[in-house]
Amino acid sequence: MKYNQIGKTKYKVSEIGFGAEWIENKEYSEIEKLVKYCENEGINLLDCWMSNPKVRSNLGKAIHKNRRKWIIQGHIGSTWQNEQYVKTREMDKVVSAFEDLLTRLQTNYIEFGMIHYVDEIKDYDKIMNSEFIEYVRELKKDEKIKHIGLSTHNPEVAIKAAKNPEIELIMISVNPAFDMMPPVLLDDYFDNDKYSQNLGGIQPIRTELYQTCLENDTAITIMKGFAGGRLLNKEDSPFGVALTPLQCIHYALNRPSAKSILVGVKNIEELKETLKYETATEEEKDYSKILRTAPKHSYLGKCTYCGHCAPCPKGINIAMLNKLYDLATVHEDIPLSIREHYNNLEAHAIDCFGCKHCEERCPFGVEIIEIMKKAYDLFGK
Image 1: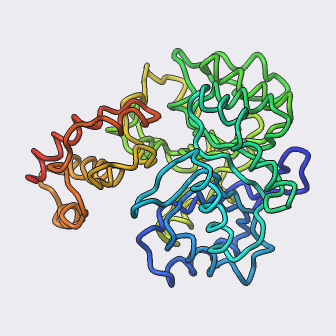
Image 2: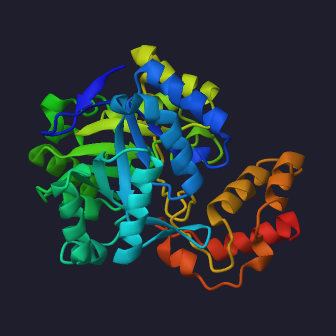
């Protein structure tokens, strides 16, 4: 396993990190096996944005004996309200949720306190001029967090954060579909010695982000490296051909200032596939042949199941419903397993009354209400 230094901190993180978002419905025994496998393979970075108490408690129990082996990104502003995840800036809820995180992870500190999910400039500015940032600074002073980080999907927010010396780590979604503008020529892609000459295919705002992070020694950890799995599927890939997990990982880790990609895995088999990156050949990791002829594309309007549309006033698990809908539509007939998963959801597409609060919160502009209508037509309720 390769390790990368996080800015001026003392921490070195594994280039493959454990993004634990897919463990919500797992039994503890399965989570324990995953955590132990990570430890044995040298993975030492853990991101916990999830506010579900069961998830936090299971993770805490699993890492407790080897807590010192782990570098934790824990999120400030991710809360659990009425049995749902809610992003909030209400300080009473922020404080209690963070204390809950420490308690359930069975630790008195985390390495990186991540200001959670800041996707608008006005939200960033409000945070930086309010009691929210004062609380974060207090956490650092009290050594409940060792360093301050921030998570976002918005490169404009990330640039502002990278220019802020208080923020030493940014977690942002990175993959070729989010980065690139056609036409794309990748003969000598992201050679650090020729950095400025090799960014012609990247959106200008992304170019600026990577350059700003380099100049300010701000580290990047990566989420959405597979774009919610769409890049791994020929039909969904904007390039008209599927990339492999190894190619996606290699692309992400070749971004300037990128230190680790946090991969979401459901089981040890998926984790093993990811870890093949560490022994893969350059040919196996090479993504340039595919991207060199990439057509115009856009991921706006495509659900990546990030969950930031929550909470739904009717209790619909929108991210899961969207995922089940996408999985069902790639088959001629809906598999019984997918239909059963859908039927077991606490709320269904029929419960949606079109308030569009979810669409206002969606980072990717997904027309969620239209998906609800299509899901109702597909599943029948």
